[in-house]
Length: 386
Image 1 (cartoon, rainbow, N blue to C red):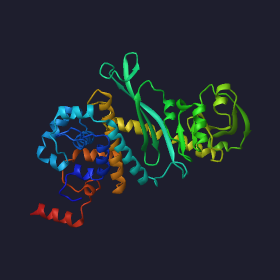
Image 2 (spheres, one colour):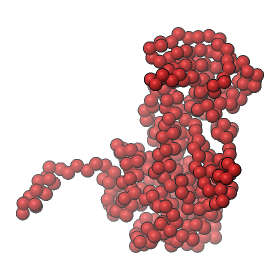
Image 3 (cartoon, one colour):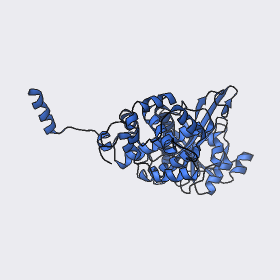
Image 4 (tube, helix red, strand yellow):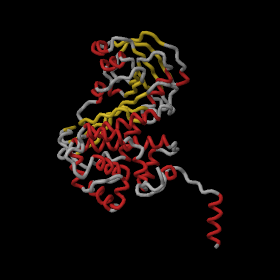
């Protein structure tokens, strides 16, 4: 990487393009394509994500205004609305999904040593979903309610570094709990979920796979206390019990004992947690559930700073392509942040990159605080005096 390259090109150098080319061959992405390749499509869509473009016309106008620099961005084809729209409609979205998953694996390795809010060395995931509302007449393939369309982003977030390790895009009607059937449980890992995922048959499958879960029960939850462990009520804990389920269907789904922990927070609200881990300190279990809010912050962040609420196409393929490229850009910036050891947040990095894609400043210099030396200050004062 040298100072003669544009900032956008320097950023894209961190992506594994050998993997991208292999995926293009796998999905025949460039079959019968003459001018506008899959790489051109990805770079244009990534540019749109970084610079907050709102439409295909917006992308076309911005890139054509810098037509002499497109070659140095890596874009070889002619940028036009029709070419980009056709690419989003016809190129297989799984190409970009697999590419984003490759970036996710790289990012997770880099963030293995990130601190976690709880004193725990195991992998901790937060599972949740968010809904993006759509117009039913434009997106009839994503029904939600009677006169409404929507898509759901079901996300399994690795809490070390806030890196999404699993994403499933569905229509708005798919219930959150069904996503548990799509997960491949990781032995020894913790899955932290809200009460929308309370299904004892599916939770027992996690338990049998050697995984652990922390979840809140519903208000009508019924159980029988088997044994109570002593707790320090000054810490906010109210109970730490081994329980058995007494309702017929929950007991059929989960025939073994569970651990029930009661905790009263600083606002006076009583929170109850269920887990299948019996050796972990009760306060650590409460801290794990508190970390679940990172996935809520992740959804809020990507909705504010990535283009996933206004789509450049109306087909299912175009929507999934845009979302997966947005995820790839998010993870790529996270990789750059770690590899360059940058102190700034992802939000700050994206703000900087959104204003400087066509500059030739070295990326490390651009993304770190530049403090002028004493000699530079002295020279500047001398020039003003002269």
